[in-house]
Image (cartoon, rainbow, N blue to C red; front, side, top):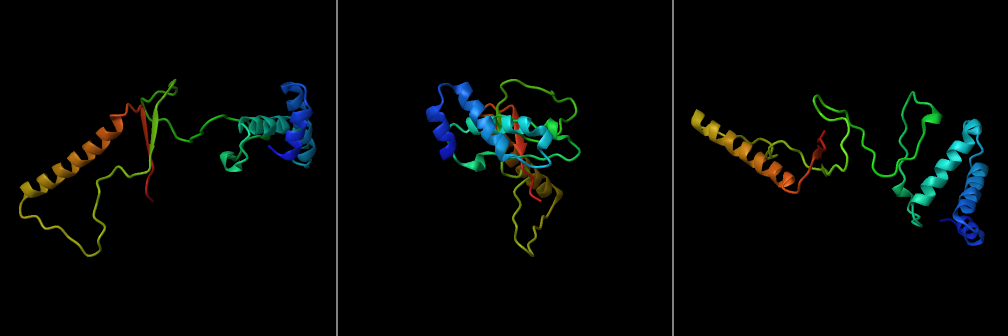
Length: 159
């Protein structure tokens, strides 16, 4: 909380008055030609965000996501974590109390990254054995994730 906001909090008799004072400060701060007609909307958004920080001053906790072709009036404050993903075929569009695990590991088989290396296999049986070993390793990796009762597994892709 800034010094001005803290001072207003000290002299405010109640939370509604405190919010009103913060909204007035935000309105004054947001004087720009772009936001002129939407100043009330954005000042209330700013107050909601600041009050949601719960006296933390780390502004890295605030993320602003911009979408092209959207109207400024569509702006809103979302408490929590936003993730832009498309819903796949036959997947539910909404799940309440979901348990989500975000994994920063590729889900393909672990490949040895050594330049100029090769694997020589004598027979088709050895190729099949190698493929089965890779599948088993992948299965073990996935089972570890789902042993902690995960509903969704979000995977980052290496590009």
